[in-house]
Amino acid sequence: MTETTELDPTRRYLRPVARLPLPDQPDVVHLAVYEWLPMFEAWATGMALCGYSTRQGPLPEGTVVTCARCLEWQPKCERMLAPGYRPEDDDPDVLRRRAEAAERLHQTHLEVERRLAVEGLAAAAAIERVRNVLDELKAQGATGMQFYTGVLAALDEPKRRTR
Ligand SMILES: [Zn+2]
Picture 1 (tube, rainbow, N blue to C red):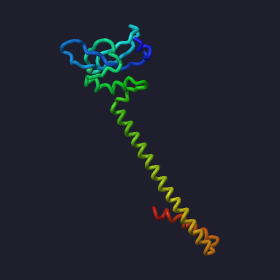
Picture 2 (picture 1 turned 45 degrees about the vertical axis):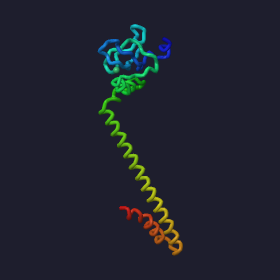
Picture 3 (picture 1 turned 45 degrees about the horizontal axis):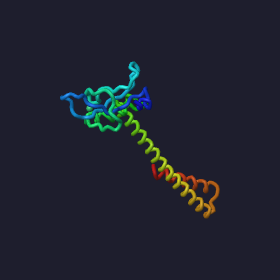
Picture 4 (picture 1 turned 90 degrees about the vertical axis):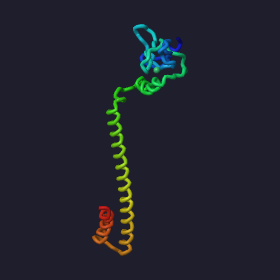
């Protein structure tokens, strides 16, 4: 089969497979894992994902799978067969903890953004206030301690208001 030359023998694939020609078998096309068996130096299909036995060998690429239970298992099996799959990816506890950690990170990020926005507004307000006070003090001809006391009071003002 030409297909085997394109497949990676270290990986496993899903392929449509035919039912066994027995009267008690549902008339559907199943899905099975297709893998390289080093002992036999051959590619082979296993039992159907739904648990039924099947005829050996994959059906032609593009054959429509009609077994509902095989189709149900397909997404999970595809995940498990994908390169880089980690078994803990299907552990609900691990997934939940990962989701919680992501949520905490997201909330912290929002809090930092909120704080930065508040600080930014406060800083802008302080700068504006000091600028106005400087103008006033200059207009009054204030000097020395009178001048600096006025500037410090302007800097403190937004803090007093928010606390
Ligand atoms: Zn099936």
